[in-house]
Amino acid sequence: MKRNAIILAAGKGTRMRSKLYKVLHKVCGKTMVEHVVGQLEKADIENIITIVGFGAEKVEEVVGNRTKFALQNEQLGTGHAVMQAKDLLANEDGETIVVSGDTPLFTADTFKKLFEYHEQRHAAATILTSVAPDPTGYGRIVRNDVGIVERIVEQKDATPEEQAIHEINTGVYCFDNKKLFAALKNINNDNAQGEYYLTDVIEILKNEQEIVTAYKMSDFDESMGVNDRVALARANKIMRKRINTKLMESGVTMLDPETTYIDDGVQIGQDTVIEGGVVIKGKTTIGNECYISAHSRIEDSTIHDGVTITSSTLQEAEMHDGSDIGPNSHLRPAAEIGKNVHIGNFCEVKKAFIGEGTKVGHLTYIGNATLGKDINVGCGVVFVNYDGKNKHHTNVGDHAFIGSNSNLVAPVNLAANAFVAAGSTITDNVEEYDMAIARARQVNKENYAKKLPW
Image (cartoon, helix red, strand yellow):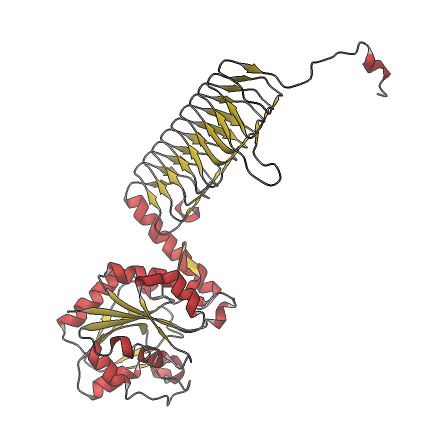
């Protein structure tokens, strides 16, 4: 049976109080609509159509070719939104799931179970429901005396008795595709909102003696829609707990998971330990047996095995096996740290490769450079890479020694085993085994201190 999906993503989301289109707000690193698309893809649904309206171009840019798109110029309700997919979907066979683009917590497993339940009962429509502790704002599921679904009543149209019902409509449906579009022709906007409700399709199918069922999911949190910043924060918290639990079950230790913030899609190996206050974002991969200490921030970076990161920031960087950094250091984009390299405290590295076994102790800036193996970089060294207009490159050979408080003014090359005396400003190349001294000789003025006004 062919499986289709329609994502409703045309609403403006005025309650978000934002210039950003609602479904493009992020939950744990991904936009809400990306979460929905991703879970539908995992549920083996290949034919996905996203209904867009306000901000359509930005949604299409984010989702790309993962879905087809249909435009809803006027937001006249959920039923009207689904009608916009008519040209792309109305003649297709199979089953169609309808889901909102602002419900980022639904899982592929729930979608699969909904399809299976729907197909097993040969239903024309199946409503995904849940039991809400507080059903205010949700459409209520009205059943008859034997538990068969009779209709869905929206909050504003519900009687006091109906408002007391706690089984709610999650806004997700599974339909026989052709019966869905046939029923849509008969809906109207005779309701408190003056909109075309998709829920009216349920009553139409019931009146036609079609089978309408409801699958009750166990985890109410999955069904949460995000309409404002408060709900967005709650969705992030639920998603973060889900991500952290999965990682801990796979062998990652988190000392304080409630204060550990990890984006969806981050990969972390076994026996890695993460302290509280750590933020790991984007397309980051962390290997086995690493240690990430409190208040580190890692974004779009690759961390190999046995790496220690102490209260430091990494952006689009790579650290190889056994290397370490921190505390309070910063790897900026295109920084690559080789095996067993030590980057100490208050260092910054950008667009530079540092070879195996090299030590960069503290208070140092390395930018636009290539460093070989087993180099010692002293305290306060600056790779001077910018002339005010262009960036220039510095090369340092294996086993070189760069004394403290030295400046290497690019472009410049230091050969293997070169030695730079502390306090030097190097502007010319240094050959192998040479020692470069670029500072004035010390002169002591006898008894001069007595003349000072102390």
